[in-house]
Image (tube, rainbow, N blue to C red; front, side, top):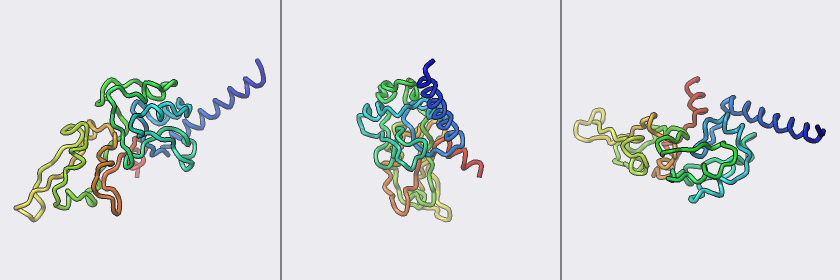
Length: 202
């Protein structure tokens, strides 16, 4: 066997090991495309070819920046700028050459993350009627529901409070993109599995 082949193989193995180690430590908060099967698996398979980015008709995918460490150049979604539209044919998955993105049979099978609402920042919880995230959800009345409840100390007015069903939410981020509140921060976000694991451990 040629020395160059041995070196190339060893280098590839090292990169794969580093990628898995990075993901296993739970450092990634990057929102991945549909079909990703967990950060460790994704990082071990993704070759940063950019084909999924090119295939996205909504330009929702982009390469992770330099601050992403080992994940630099891997495809991710900035939901506030352009959320995933959950295309029926999932073109990003179709062009992946390494199965970093696996076949998805239906929208409801996607698992990118879970929406999390900051009730203190959400205007619906402050008494204003706002159903923007609810109306934007492609899985309306499944992933996001409206809980009609009375305000504490107010027997007249009803709160239209958005509630996330964690089992149904796929993490597409359309609720984040459409949220009307931006200051001081957007009161709804998508938490990846890595983020949720960290938060539960705190």
